Length: 165
Image (cartoon, rainbow, N blue to C red):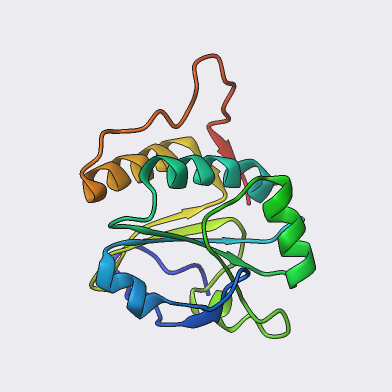
């Protein structure tokens, strides 16, 4: 089964957070759209993409949009990843024995990002690294938060157009 695509309903889920407490998609949707970013710590494309997702979080905060990472690894490995890549947005932990949430979203590759509307509809699915899709997410975040567009890619920074997940 391929990853859920635009127009599909996102499955509801709750997962423990790396820091403390839990993340509920239904609760997050009450605030606004959700950017859910699935990853595995050993994935080179995830390692490439997550610092850019962190820039989005740093630029738009956690006001009207929720950005959440969903790790397919255990707590110690996930903590090392977030420390190494300076990730400060919330990270939820999928069950590494059966991956119920990853499977419910039809994941075949990581990173896979889903922009989920407050009504639960998936409005954008991005698999692997896509610079144009990251620019789309930047525009969606700016529109949803009412803030100006952040500079996601810095002048002189070499940014790949695409990397397979």
